[in-house]
Each structure stands twice: as structure tokens, then as C-alpha cells.
Length: 375
Image (tube, rainbow, N blue to C red; front, side, top):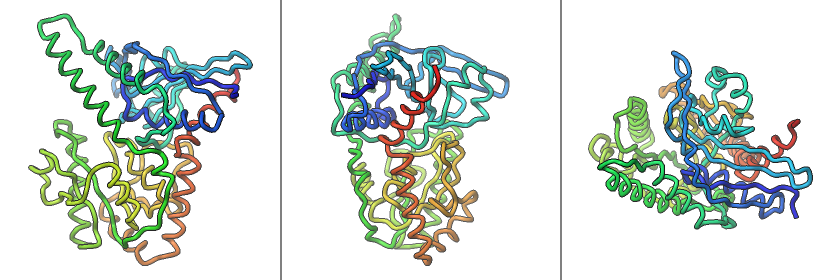
């Protein structure tokens, strides 16, 4: 029996938090910890944002921050911690800062953390690269569903004439979210690596639902330019494109993919490709593509990350970084003709995933880090 118990408080968002939960359930399988899923209906309101003019706090929820408690059964010590999986590096959960001993942030940038009060910034640490996945050993499915549904209905409820309409929309949104999370791939799919079967260059991506935000518009246009560039240069060697959607069909039809777009098919296409392309996520957050690529030991040509990792990816070791799109084609051409470089990048990419990104290893690092700190 393990000396440690981790309470998993059901979160308000399940897509991103699945990474942390997968790590915990996989560690339980290895008898490193015992998990306990706790149905939580707490709203956990409060968002702190760092701006050029100072720190601003609102009463908005911060649903992509999930909450946990680590218990040392021998000493009785209890450690409250949170995982902040937000795209924004300058946004923080006020509730987590008040109630947690440690916060592990996905898009960690020290320049924003350092603007927080001293007692807050000392709680925040880099989380590293994450992606959506789940464990076949997951427990408490009904509690996760009820926590998602009831908490968000409570947050969205307001006693006015639009009450019923607001509740209906919230219910539909959470049911859709729940169904989508059921499509996430088992961690086993990322652990299985097969040699590439095509001497191809792969980049398949999506558009978001609107371009009202300038950052989203810039991402769409960058992805479109990259795909058109790859299609023109590599012809039939290029695989991928933008996934069809109402917005993509209207604005980026020249770059649409004709390949399958479901999550399992996507991962299989990653596995079969030799070279894969990475571009940034929303607000320069580290997109899921990077850990997915690393898991398969791909030759990765990537836009440079701005998120700070505990152990940085190195140019020429695990990946090849480009800062300007004009650098993209020469880097791809280099790896296509350099087998020794390909072998080096592939081996190091897989090693990096196994050591630092696999949810079991990363979550174990987090637990050991907290336990090693003085009370």
C-alpha cells in the first residue's frame, strides 16, 4: 500500500486536465500513490491578470485550473496544489493563489510571474509540455461528469429573465465538451512507436471558430502561409492541411486537408510521417502538437517556444527551431538529406518525451518536488 494519497477534485474543464489525471491514475497502477476522486461543486471564482498598467483581478472563473491534494499518510502532511493549463501566460487563478501551496503552470513565463506579489510568485512553477490523453485505469467517471456539469451550471446561472436560456446553453455546452473528451486517445497510443512509412512532410492543423481576436487571426494566417509554402515546395511529399470547418472553408480553402481528421487517425498519420511541422498555439502557448510529435520520435521542425520549460528543448538536439518562416524550407531540406541528423533528432525527441513529458513521469516529478520541500 502506498504512503501517499492524491485527492482529485473534479474540475470545471476536462480536456486539458486529463493530462494530470492520466499521470495520477498511471502512478496508482504502479502503486506509487492511491487516488481518490472527490466530487467538487466549488465555483473557485477569481482571475488575476498581469497587464502593462498593473495587476487586475476579476470575479471570472478560471476553469482550466484543476485542483488536487497530496497526503502523506505517515506524517499526516497535506499539500494543496493546482495545475494551470491556460493558454495565457499572464493569467492566474486567484482561488489557486489563495488556497494552494503550489501551482504548476503550462504556459510559464517568468516575466509575468515576477510581476505578482512575492507570496504568490513563489507558489508558481513550470508544468512543462502537456496534451490531451486518458488512462484505461481512470476511476470516478460519473463524478467527473457530474462535477463538470453541475459546477458550470452553477457558474452560468443568474436569476433574471434569461435564466432558462442561459442554463440550456450551458447544459448543451457541457454535454458537447463531455462527448469531445471521450474521443481523447489512451496514453498507450503515445507509448507505441513505429518507424515512419513515408518520406513525407506532415502538418495538419485547424482553425478556431472565429477570428474576432487578433491573435487567432494571426495564427490562422501563419498556418495558411506555411501550408501553401509546403505544398508548393514538396508537392506530393507534403501531407496535411487545414481541417475543414465553416471558417476554414470560407477563408482558407486553398489549404484544406483531404485526410482524416479524427484524433486516432491524426496520430496514425503523425506516426507514418518522417518530418513534422510545429507552429505556436494560442497566445504563444505550447500546442499539443509538440508532445505528440516527441512521443513518436519525429524529426520536428518547429517555431521557437516562448513558454519556459524545466528542461528546455535544444535546437539540433531534439528539434530544429525556426524563428522566421523563410528558415522553414532550408531546415526541412537539410534533414531530408541527412540521415545521421534524423537519427539523432528522432532518438533525442523520444527520450525527451519519456523523461519529461509522459504524464506519469511529469506528475511523479511534481509530487516528488512537493514532498522534498521543507514545511
